[in-house]
Length: 131
Image (tube, rainbow, N blue to C red; front, side, top):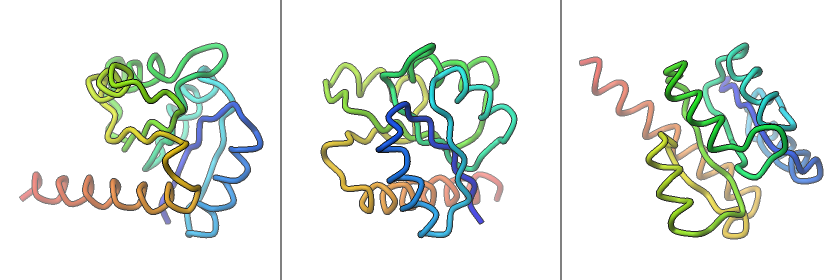
């Protein structure tokens, strides 16, 4: 079973994603802000982190930077945000995100499919690296 951490401050949205991912067979944990997300990511070492950017206490860019820099977490990290500007997307990818999804472009069901696709690609590249 794939472990997923959702870091999202909008509880209505978080509940929708929680339900959709559980229906798809994921083991799901939830964090409601950046600081909590960082702490939970360190504790849980999930397979995938779905990370919002605009959040209280610590934004998603800072969380991503800490996870990729300070801790060198190998977890698949997908930014899921309403920030659609090209500069934001480039910044997210430069900081080490595996994918950048704009919430308005995907239904929750489509987000599940995209996460599965990104995770499959990441796992395939890991298998190729270990050969």
